[in-house]
Image (cartoon, rainbow, N blue to C red; front, side, top):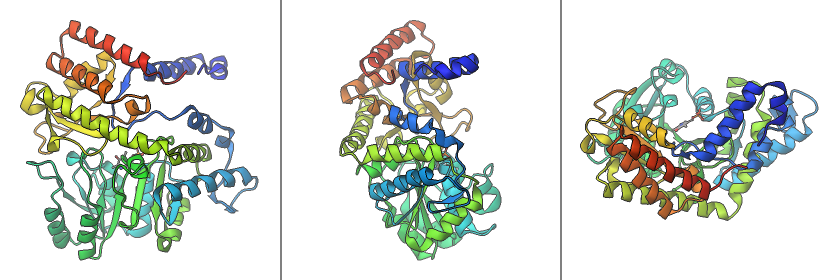
Length: 415
Ligand SMILES: *Cc1c(COP(=O)(O)O)cnc(C)c1O
């Protein structure tokens, strides 16, 4: 990727773009929400469709010249329906947050009630955080995971639903390492006649690839980001039954957005086609298997994991028991020096702060895309342990840095 046209016009941006490709090639992306899309998805996202205004939906646009925009959007929709088995799909949300916004805007009035997971326990800003529009427009109550076990306390969630009587219950998380029981949450929502939004942003690919149970057909609405485990480029998606189709489509456009990002929708179409290939099931299974290997090996090194392991693509480490003097931020920074990129994260029962939390969240989707298997991942876990045990030891860091380089060279990414 040489970005020759950009370089001619704007060397400063070209340097940053090339620098980013090199950074991705030469470091280990272990941020659980990240992935590497194929060059085919990159090409589609960089296409001339970025020029096209296509307000409206296929066959019913407010502008002329939409025949290719229609082709691309119809392909994205058909493929998404096949991947997730949804009756209706809207592929226009600019991101996962916009997908959630569409559901709230379609179904709630200001002042209505949302019951969702507390952010520091694994929820998402767009589920009702005070700094987000959801926290300002709606009345929000939060459920939590059991701080002893790290698992969702479904009994407590159900009891809270009965007491709070929400209009919508939100499930789906950013830092929850375990399988979600969608039926159990649906039961709680049904008990109080609430709607249920399952936000599968993180696990879209695991659900599509059969590595996590699907909420489609259980929850009223399913939303997701398209750039995480599904590897289809940056964007969002909403799925629902036919009965809500018009409401959702109107809430996306004109309710919350203007013209769709047709180049991104082209990326979604291509990424979804890739995910329909049988090899994607292997990818999803390998991602989980790699996360389990990571969990086991970190535990061998004495790390304490929230819920003591994982069922999905991520591991949440609570550093307090094993490394009481090392914050998540200290660990993140030291690891980044060696080329292992992950994020500090709050843990259930957090005793520090959101800015300086006690945990690190580690994901395997991107490394699995690069071809890492369990053996490679165990080497990475050994590296993480070495660095977190001695975050200020420069010789440890340089030794680990060399191992990281070897792993990157052995699992090439972009040309
Ligand atoms: C990532 C994420 C989103 C959406 O994020 P965007 O950055 O807006 O795509 C929504 N919900 C959850 C649970 C997430 O983890």
